[in-house]
Length: 95
Image (cartoon, rainbow, N blue to C red; front, side, top):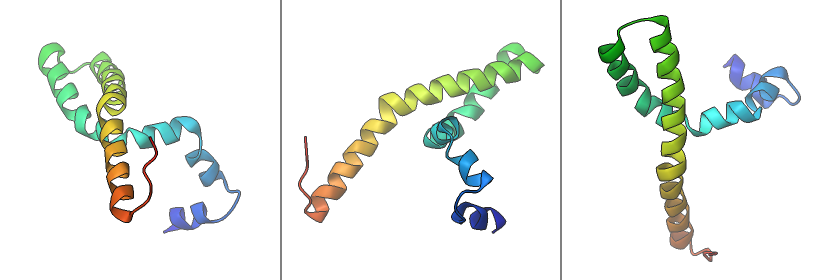
């Protein structure tokens, strides 16, 4: 509740932090991060074992694969979803 209040007030540090480009970008790919983190980490633990480098490698691979998945797959489906919603509302669809 405090976070919601902090974000709704104008010109506050929480709002500034949440509007930074890297934070917004992570928010955009958050679903892909959620989907990919566990299989990648599990695969690396089975192959490499549990070491500090395994965690760092898992984070790096998760970010790269999630960003690629978002760019190559999710964005296309989101665009189709927006187009379909516009068509159902009767809005003109621009090419």
